[in-house]
Image (cartoon, rainbow, N blue to C red; front, top):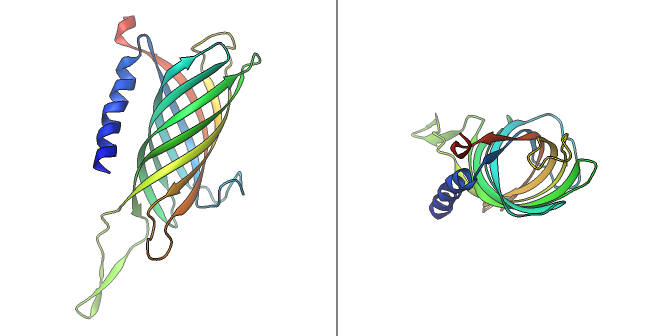
Length: 199
C-alpha cells in the first residue's frame, strides 16, 4: 500500500506540471451504494460523496483520445463507513460531432475507510468504546461515461458528464466477506485552468 501511495504521489504532480498550457480539472458529486454492479442505476437512500481529479492525454485525435486520470475521492455511507481514496484510471473517450461523448475507464487505487457507527469491545467485565483506526483497502474500478461538450469545435471545451462507476473494496472481511462491491453514480464537470506557462 505504501508503494502505491508513493507512486501516486509522484504521478499526480507529474500530471499537474507536465501540461504545457491548460490543466484539466474534473469535479463530481457522487452517490455511493453497496450494491451488485449493473443491477441498479439510481440507488436510494443517497450516500453522498465528492471527487476531484485531473487527467493527461496519451493520444488525442479529432474524435478520440486515450488518457490517464489521477483522483481523490470521499464518500459517506451513514449505515456502513466513510472513506477517502486516491486512484488512477486508464480511459478512452470517443467524441461525436454533436458534442456528445462516450467513454470507459479502468482504475486501481487505495481506499481508507472508517466506520460511521460506534464500536465496542468487551474488556475487564465491561464494554468499552473501541478506537477506530480505519481499514486499508485496494479498490479496482470500472466506469462508463457519457458526456457533453457545449463548445463542440473547441478542443478545451468545458464538459458535463454522467459516470457510472463500479468498484470493489478488498480485502473487506477476510473471514466473512472477502470483498464488497460498490456503485458510484457521478454527476460532474470538467474545466481547464491556466498554468504559469500561459502567464
